[in-house]
Image (cartoon, rainbow, N blue to C red; front, side):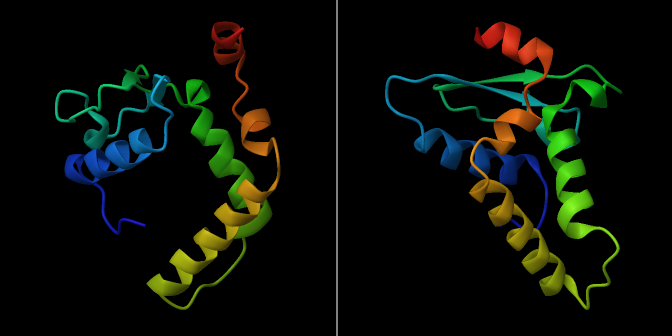
Length: 118
């Protein structure tokens, strides 16, 4: 977990993500308008393409549904003692989510994405 956000931190994430892809696969990553997601500031690996969402369009961002799911089921209505407790709660929530086979795919199956994938 990277404790701050920046274009440099995003570059680290993109590079590590790209390394998990098979050699013959090219991935497309949809990014919101966060300042550290500006493709002009990023060094995108050759096996990735980043696609920026239009401004003020959270309904197009599949990650918004993941955050909603995590908040509703694991993170809401809790008092956490400190930063370490917040990180631990988020890690537990993420691990629980990824242990649910097919859950991320079902949450992110926006019509515009499923039409492109089929």
